[in-house]
Length: 249
Image (cartoon, rainbow, N blue to C red; front, top):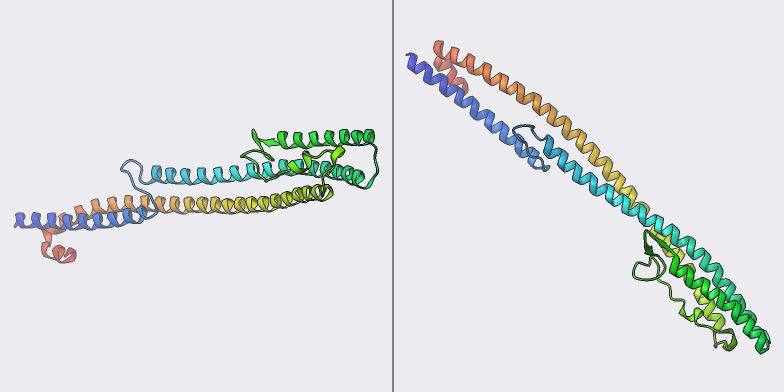
């Protein structure tokens, strides 16, 4: 009978271990669904840290990029304010020449004044930059401006429609400023969304950490229970093997 009792006790332990393996597999499946994999040395901690770190870095990088864009838009807008004022002065000269009756020397003086403003325009376009990138000219421009029509003008030979050309140039700068307002609003909205995502990641980390802590406690209790049950079942199997077998079947 002792052999029979030992076999029943072994069967009871095997049944208990099978149930614990099933529970452990289900726990791993739950964690895998959120991209976490438990290790034998530190269950889930390293995987969770890696997952949260990657997500947080991506969010922070997105916020940094959006803030840089907003800063570049602000610098560009300040340059456009100066450009707008310069173009208005140029239009005033064009209007004065178009409506006046200047002699050759007087026209030369007006053109000299105008060309000085042209140089100011070119300087603003060339020197307005942020982070080493030009904002109003070239491939990195945050707004598209074409002022060739006004910068190529001469007061000594004023072209037809010069006043309209100058007015269109001013309108183009106003439109560019409006575009920057929209772009800035869009970037600010992106930052708000990213900050909300950051809060969600933090909340996710907290909830998963709490769940992992709870699982660690449960696993410790399971191991303790397995040991105690094994001992109890072994003892019970020697006194009443059939009742143990029926309980675990």
